[in-house]
Figure 1: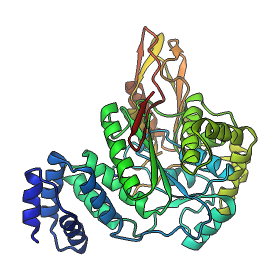
Figure 2: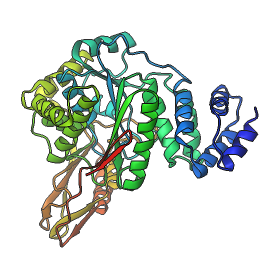
Figure 3: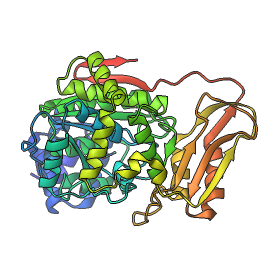
Figure 4: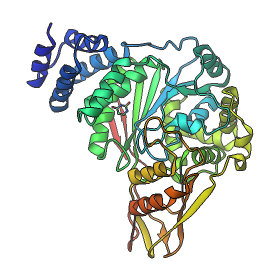
Length: 440
Ligand code: URA
């Protein structure tokens, strides 16, 4: 077999055989296929795509290129969740404890922030003392005892994806539906859960900017999951505007605590209830309506919040900051952002809001920069709300005083105030199950 011939086949839009895909991925991981040849192949896939069978074989081969985590030491059905990334997306830390409070098992590996999007692991590390790198046995013990643990990705999960992603990043091949689907799902298959819920974000702050592309990506990922015998569902949720009111690590943990206590923002609470209901549905706890009621009850009776506290304590975190969020360290500098005219907020560019929070220190400017956990943005007026000239629409927090002026400028550029109240945006656009797409 020669990689030259395989590239030629894909260049002409022909389907690759299982053996050709395995040869290409395994050869690339071993260093026998050069970066320039893999780059040509990635570009051929970008233009010609892959059919569902090719995509499943590609994903499984990428998953098997490293550790395949065996979660059988954890009793019961394990359900994983993946978000394609967003601004203010703290849903994992709300829904994982809800699912655990309802008897589900969540053994989850999460990532750090990337560009303008935040990451669950960075948010968790805003809780003093909390460890996100656990030995496998400790991780399993916590999930068996409490029902939930969230840790950082371990060393050798889908190394083929790591190598391919690095090439995609520099060869303009990130924005390809088959390449995104195989990248995400290879890590999900390797992570070992029985069922997978995918939260595919759509809109200005997401990888997928249009609903059609988001549904296409969701369909591909669901097909890959089902082909690997994992029950998989995807929800397409909005990321045209930030989710909730808080952007930035400590601020988002405080919002998690409020939401788990039934005092969260309406949009965030609604999205979390739908996501949690789908996770419970996947592990067989009932139909969607019953599962939603179960999730709501876990918030109402405080059991979801107590699960979160128990998980944090088990991972070495200081639970007292969750019981009294005033104890979180405050940023030394604060600036109010004021509305420049009367009207309604008709646009909030989620990506630009995320970038403003990175400037304040809530994300990384370079891959080695340290995160300022207290930095971020509290959004006081969201899309659709009326504002008066001079009224406070947001608060900026930082430890770098000089970042306030540029962040304020960026935030103001992200917001458009218009005369007419805009139409409401749905929070969840669609639900994709194998052979079934429901548009809401
Ligand atoms: N997240 C991933 O893990 N991979 C992609 O290709 C895009 C988002």
